[in-house]
Figure 1 (cartoon, one colour):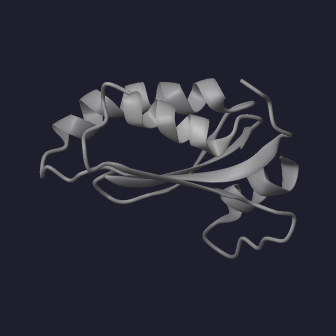
Figure 2: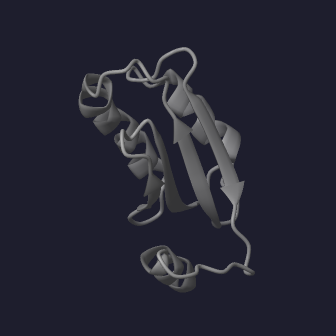
Length: 109
């Protein structure tokens, strides 16, 4: 597997909402382990919905995005219908009021 240059990225996770929080409580730790495995350094929770079925993480990675998505899709905690998206964050960004922690992370990573 070829390493790419390190990129800052926003990983967005949308889990199928089965109307219970059990899935998030029991399944999300395995998904987070995949995120941690591909992140260079500690990823940062950028946002989440109140029920946690939608969340986003800032991360630095040297892996191709398609490899990360493939591993997330293979994770035993994911279900058919779960969605993942990764976008690269360039040098031009702005984090306004309410996103100071996220802006801080982006500034220093």
